[in-house]
Length: 484
Image (cartoon, rainbow, N blue to C red; front, top):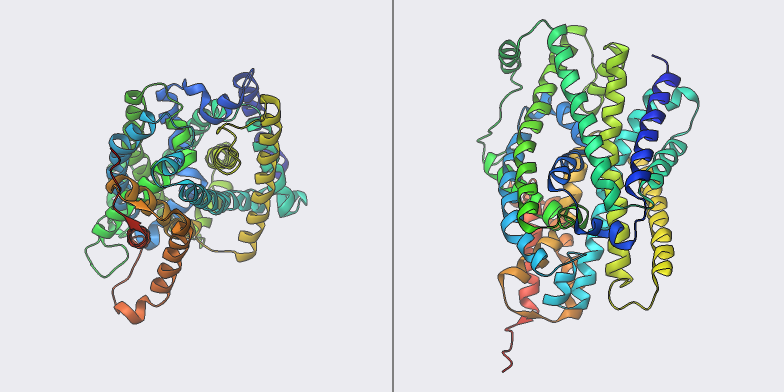
């Protein structure tokens, strides 16, 4: 299938998204943009958040990593389930009780204004780095397989994708994203299932036979028992729990969708439903990874890692499967990018500019400022995607989880200290603690071979980062004084 035809399907899919956005974004206001008028359907939010949580990186990198790590990623997914339980029954009741628009306002109430802005700033940094890494991977695939053949430069491809996202999130915000994420998650899962079915038929394997073949090749191992290894199951499960707590429960993008649901009980059902479905979806992605490497061996394909799925789907499968793959890939891209830009706009307007804290701006002025901020983040996204292209890392899922360990650690420390203790902090010193903790983690990670020998620190670096932050906050705190 020619690049022009493939690109025409991308454009057609975007027009469908734009139609949905126009319909759902009518008569929207700032409250619609930020929290969907607190009236979102919990089932739609739960289903749409699957696409947001997975993203294009999961769609490409998780299957691609099977040859190297087998099904080890499922250990992290089991940890996700534990983390989502904490979110549903510890964090969500707190957010609903305080009727928060931005979850970081809790830090303002509990610790102080500087702590509040520090937490929001770390979220903004985290989301910019993580979302642009996800965006880069998908843009690169589209560039290499479609737009490069049309003579379109990489930066133009990135600009086009971001322009598409801005167009359908510009007005409706969360109110629109709840619906577009549902559509995109549907398309992504259809693409996943179609690719699995096609490869099974091509290899003339039934489900049981395919499991045997994958196991014979050593791809299906889930639990790793070497305590020194980064893939040790206890490390991975514990890290997965804290990754979900921080990257979902302490992340404005993910939580603004949850708190847009009218009732706490429905929001809790949303989180636990998503967590359960995620187990099966990730397992299916890993199963697909095993099938891809069986297919690659049969066809003598040398592509590995992030490249294997696109190469097989676009060059070794029928054209209609290639189209489904591209639509599914775009569907995996948009929920992670559109939600990120919307959440960053919300956090910057509310947390940094103070738009909802007694601002003297009228509704029209707020809307104008919101639009400027929205467009500004799109420009920042463009710059960071170009930086990732220059860095050219072979596996983006590793990059994203590593970035999360450094940038979400201070958030973990801030929220943990606020919830688990009743101490007050010297607010002005909080930014120093939150910067020092990741720096210490970097030193620890860099010299871990000299310090620990064969013992490897992996994703648990996030927990260590949060612990450093917690200890630092304790050192600048005192017992809360009772006022009669």
